[in-house]
Length: 453
Image (cartoon, rainbow, N blue to C red):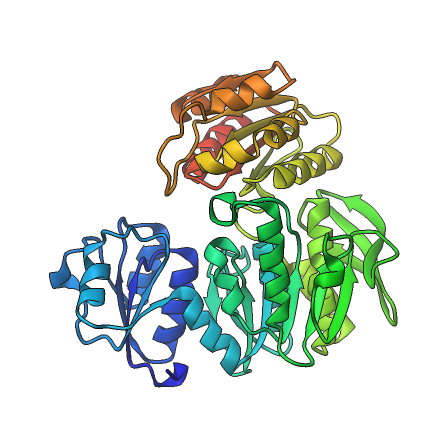
C-alpha cells in the first residue's frame, strides 16, 4: 500500500488523539475521509468542521463500503459492529500503527518514545522545526501554540509520538529516535517490567541504518539500546552528551544555558513551568541542532513555545492563586509535577486533585502512587477512571488513601471538588489525571476567576 495513492479511508475510533491526526493527514492529501466514534467531542467537532463525515452509531448501514483502507484503534471493543462487518466481508484492516509505519518508511522520521514526556517533546521538536525548516507533525496532544495535533509540510520530515501501549511503536522505522523513560507502566499489556524494557530495546533496533538515538542519561539497559549513533541527554548531569546549566527561575519559567560536547547555546528562555520541561527542551534542541536549525531560530522558538494542553498548563496564574492542570497519571509524573510546582511557588500550600486512571495501573503501582501523592500538602482523590477496564475487587481510591502517610486526604465527587474550590482558601491548586478530570478544568477556572475579580 502506497500512502500517496489512498483515495478513500475510513477510521473506526476517529476521535482519538492519534487517529484524528491521521484523519487530518489524509484529508489534507485530498482523500475522502470519514469515520465512526462513540461520542462527540470538541476534537471531533473540529474534524467535522474540516469536512470529515463522522457517525456516532456503529450500525453497518453508516459505514463506507467503498473505502479502500480501514483503520481502527485497539481501544475499539471487539464487538463493534462496523469493525466486524469489515472483517467478515474480506476488507483488510489496519491499526493506526500500521499507517504510521508506512509514514516512517516514506519520510525522514523523528519518533519520540518513553513512558513520560512523549507529547511535550514531540510537540517541542515539531514547534522548533515548524519555525525553521518545516515538518509534518503527528502529535498525541494539542500544543497551546496551535491547538491542533497535526500539521503538514512540503518538507518530507515527520515528527511522530511513538506510543508503547499495545506495542504499536515497534512498527515504526525512525531516522532519529528519542527514548525518555522506561518506568513500569502498561503492565496489563506487558505483565513485567522486564518485558516492557525489552520492548523499548526492540524500538531502538528498528532505527534505520545510520540513524540516531537520543536517550535520557542513566536509563536501565542502556548498553542494550541499538543505534548507529547514540547520544545521551540530561537535565543537569554533566556526564551526558547534552545538558542544561545555570538554571534560574523567572516568573513561573526558566532561563538556562545548554552545553553539548561540541557546541553550546547561552541564554535560553523557557516560559512554561516544570523542571522536567527543561529536560524536554534539552533533547528537543539537540534534535533541532542535528537537523541544522540555527541557534537564533532555536532561541526564538524555545521562548515562544507555550507548552501542551494539560502538560503543566497554567490555567490561572495570578499573584494570589496559581492553578495548574496536568495529564500526570503515573507516580513518576506526579512526583515531577508536585516537585516542580512547589519549587516554582515556594510558600504556597499545594492542593492536588488526582483522578487515578485504570484499575490495573492503580493496583500495580499503588505504593508508588501513595508516596508520590504524599508530596502534596493536601490531596483530594476522585474515583478511579476505568477507561477500557472493569472494576477490580479491592482496588479503589480509598485503597490509595489508606496507603498514604499524609492524613490530609479526602475522596470527593466532581461536584464535591467544585464545592471545595468555591469555599476553601487556595494558593497553589493542581488537577491531575488522564481520565475525564479535564471536564472540571473550565468550571474550576471560572470559580477561581470569580473569586479573584
